[in-house]
Image (tube, rainbow, N blue to C red; front, top):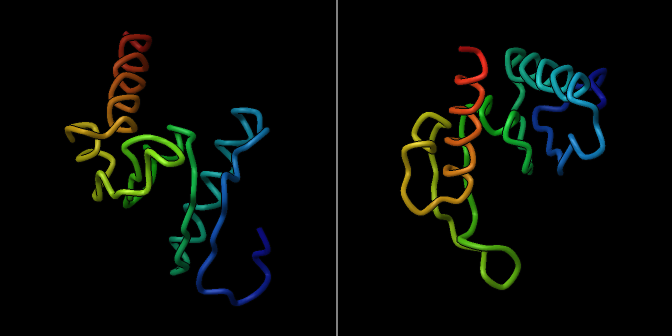
Length: 104
């Protein structure tokens, strides 16, 4: 991500692909700083950690390829985990529950 320019909008397609979890956390911090600086950041991503930290989620589905392409959800991550009909919401709900259980 080039941060030295004056770009107002950044579009990233699966930026976590191949990254170690520590690097994913660093990337999320970088994305947060861009947004805090007034930039618009659009991320196409499957990583649930990134989805959970998003300000707004647009979930396409209901499946992949020819079975997808329809907006099945639009809203915040908190709303996504309560949404019916979103596989992403279902996976995120399970992930957050497992994380909470691991923390005790």
